[in-house]
Image (tube, rainbow, N blue to C red; front, side, top):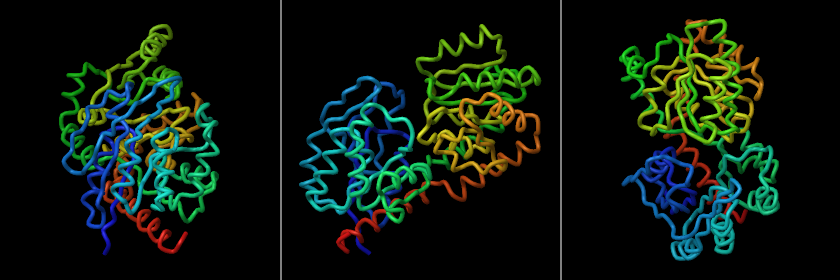
Length: 385
């Protein structure tokens, strides 16, 4: 079978994407090259993964940061696409010069284009509104689209993509890593709690940025209601961000007890925190996906998130967790209570989480989904689509 020469245009080096790119590079039908617009973004504290498992380049150029908008300008990509004559170009988004130039250049070269996005319908930034006509043009004229979730698929279709052109590979992390590491840590659960100075038996965990759209204030209020009824529950918050002091202040002024704060930790350290938890909660007000849900499920945890998160695809309501309304303290409180006070339910939900991950959300299946989209895009070109 033909080996496809594939380029991926991605914003920055993310530890969560490296396993996918390595998997694609190792696929017998794929010759992969990844172009990064920048090494990282200023708000990201990730260690940068240097991988020999795939070929990549950080493009020369400029990254502009203003009004919560990140805008990449990498003109050198145009010459790269012309010189390399790729069979397929996969473009992550359409909101900056680099992705727009990649689309226009590939279209002029008659190279099949795949639009790849976690984007979902909802409130748009000013930039999103301004480029909306261009985004719709790109989506409509792409040979195929790769959506991160069913919500992202709906977004593509709403903006002009034919349903048969939209592929939804599992959006995932290296779940084997999280599963194996967490299994090791769980044998030392009580000792780890002592090291972390956590005294409570039941623990709810949040891991992520401490920013407004994550809805952490609703989690705090829901947790306070639960804490008033069940004293031996604690809340662990792992992450950093501009709202940290405000969240700590809320805990102090409202006398919310047993909330444990830990600063941002690297991906390799996260399994330790998942291993001491009994429940994971992502209470987002807006969330294109939320890969922490994948991580928590790979560690065998029940999960709760809101209906606006793309990662709700991973939750089978009442079987491995709950999907609740965003910004609703009572819904969140009741869902947390149902799991925390019922050990048998929590155990079954955790087992179901791991089963779902192993069956449907692993890197191999993600790679196969990408390959299906690549094959489709190339067939479309051959047929003149």
